[in-house]
Image (cartoon, rainbow, N blue to C red):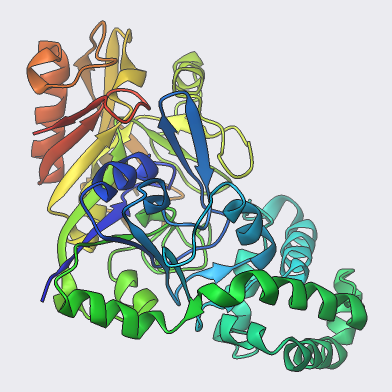
Length: 416
């Protein structure tokens, strides 16, 4: 019986997980997504072609790999079908959990209405409906993908839900769907997706029992986890490695090597605390050099320096065996590079992540910069100051940096 390798984001998402999943998918039989929705985005560059994936596992780009979307995902059929159109011959290579919850257009309406009503206290969600879909799941009023196989019954349930909650939806400005249009929409989804819907929990057990090589991928990052992130400025799912168990129906003993993904600096999208954010021209330079604009929304990302305190937290929460350090080349040309090594909190210096990061101040250590790492494919090719930076990060976060990315290209990857 095999164990499943796992990839998890260690910051606030957007760490570059897609490239590493693509890299590792070349040697795995199955790639399995365990959490999140189409608010996530992986950008993968292969030669001259760029792929932006949101729901389909990144293994789709390896013609030999098969792909599973687990029950922990909230799936928008409309967006999933649009994403599928980029690829051919997916039958037999793509499997969707019949227990994954469905995200429909009204969830996005609810999401956007709530953000409007919060005004300047808005969380800064993508407005894609992820929170309301997970909210329905937890409130036991959601609907699962298996129900899509019976669109008439599902339509009746959704219309009943809107009738019961009419005063609330009226107050929010959310319109109930037209029954005939909803039925036609659901039927169109069934026609496309029904060949892919199955019991993926049993499938996961079968492929592990058959000693297949399995790779698990999440969405977003540890600091956006519903329990362990900067609540309430988080996503609505379990983004840490433990989420793979509930999101795919496997147990902790099924998980093998855990690879955590982090940028050589740090970014965040949306509102919420970000201790190492840089508001100076250097922060703008990080954004421009790194093309830091959201894959899903196009929003400019907030940029700052590597946060070793939050990283230690994420490494421990996830049981990380090795870190993949992404976008090292974005730091090329900086005279000095800062790392947050501690926080000032309530007049004291601390080296852990407190309950609330809102009132902490970053304490930095400065490292000398370097001229160029872009395109390097071996550790020996890196400038000495870049090597020292990486070795210092390893000491601070307490785990090995086993993979280093020096450009978006698939081949510009150092494996140590």
